[in-house]
Length: 73
Image (tube, rainbow, N blue to C red; front, side, top):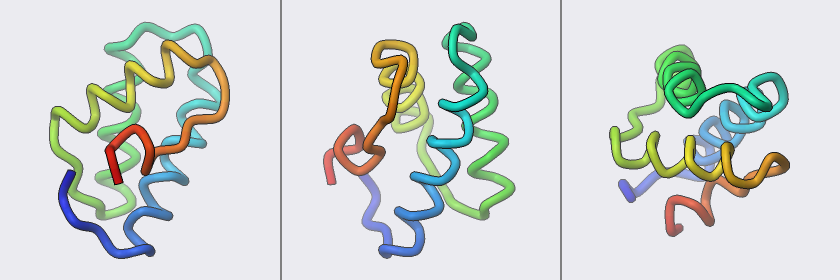
């Protein structure tokens, strides 16, 4: 994972929370697309691998996701 400030991690978590809340049951591709849009809007750089890991966690957990834990931080 890219080193991020606590503010950046908060922004990542906010995007993950938002996508999780209204993407329940969506396909992984849709979740990944919405994550990318959210990260772009928040001005946070997240790699494709990190987006994939977060999308898989959202699809697999169907509940609250700890972005920092998923990204290994």
